[in-house]
Image (cartoon, rainbow, N blue to C red; front, side, top):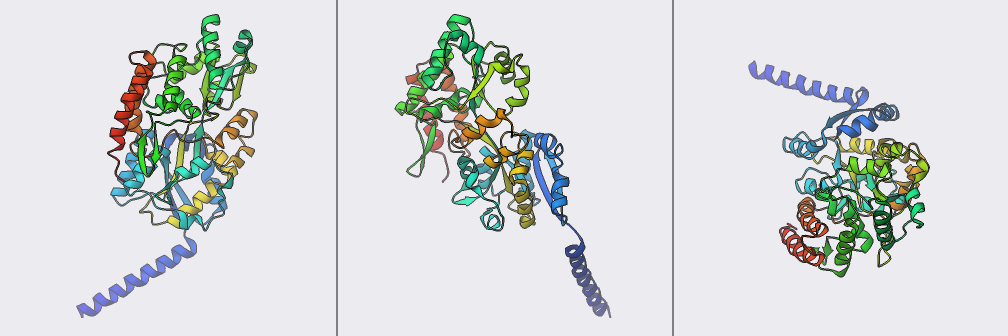
Length: 417
């Protein structure tokens, strides 16, 4: 009797589950959980009604956003994966793609991408490539950035000099502005770890040089190359005409530029809204793509973010539906805080204004300052110490490159292939 009753109960439970599943598929919505940086959520997702737009376009889905502080983003991704509660869609810091993939937190996306209408032919090649690890796509770029050069037209006019087209032009302007007008060439915080990769260090790409790269299948330090030494000598000379406060922060540096105390500045997308309003006369500000270095290269350092899919997501098809929507040009323009990855998105607000034209041009050839492996941050911290010492004159550029080569290679030798 008890056995018969138990069997009857099991049948009812199974029938109930089947009925519930059928009801869910017939009338319920598929849930998509998205983890992203709280600043992205507040500044673009909420502001531009992305949740409402997506659910109106895809009424069978319910998107739920969880927001987290920037410093906790990676830890939250790894914790959710370790606890078996992976998010469906994840905002990934581009430099974290390799470590998160190595930690098993990201799912390969190629089979899912094939079912979409996404066309990467007009996207930043470097940003797309950054999401490909070991031959498979683990990230799709949606918010890269890059650097261009900004300069004060009034200062150049007073000096009788033309806008800089080469790195030599920049040094000429730097020396003249400092000696004739008491104006700094550029300004920035040299104690910041990534100063040697971005900021002033970003100009290393103009010298056709990187701190390290993949050479014959091995990550190799390149600071012993003539191009690297030429860059460090250029940067050391440039620093003669920069403020000597090693902790001058970005906010102060940008204000100094807006006040006419700095002739030139590496310019990022975020400065469009934060710095331009500080100029008393907008016509004093002008932009150009990055200057050409000694070998004819015009490099620009990229950063930014990618979308990923949690490896343990139980709704990968639904996750890709959201990504397909979010990566349409008009939606990329609404979601990006830096720049959209697709150059077609520059045809839509808020990027369809002249202030972004130079970024659209520069993005086509921009690249990351070095391969974004999980040792990137450690290399930056180590190399910036020697780079900073050269700028300050405590060691020579030759010594900085020699010591830096040894220290960076020692780090890269620990990479697990």
